[in-house]
Image (cartoon, rainbow, N blue to C red; front, top):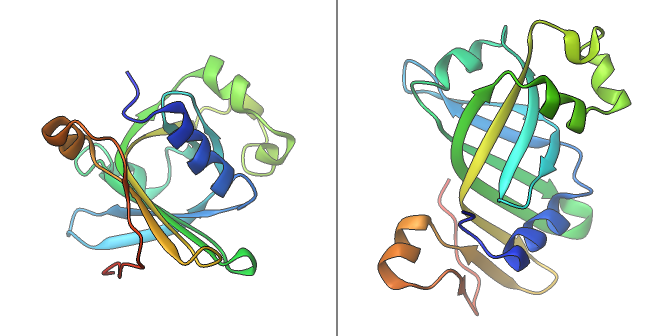
Length: 165
């Protein structure tokens, strides 16, 4: 069951559709935050983000122990900044890999979906917030826990809000 309405998922999808890379931040074994650029392959109707990676990447070893991640997107030319927090899951799923496959992915995985190291990351979105400077508003989509407590699924803020980094 999706945490967000289709309108909320579509809002996130429309914001990131033309942003080539998201900075994918994880926590390593020493509790240090590390980031790397990853290309979002899809945001599905359930509100999951999908990425390709290799199981040889060091950060993939940390994900099972520290599944909480953040992906930040920016399009300065559009004055758009978006941050998504969620839980990441590693999957080996050739059918899903075929569904998501693009010609550009071959640059990273020359053997295609048969590459033994090709791994999918599914991020279940828990919260998303974006700053759209063109509208001078900060919009925050709330976490599942808040939705469960209040019964509300969206908070719209009428004034800019500072995000602590």
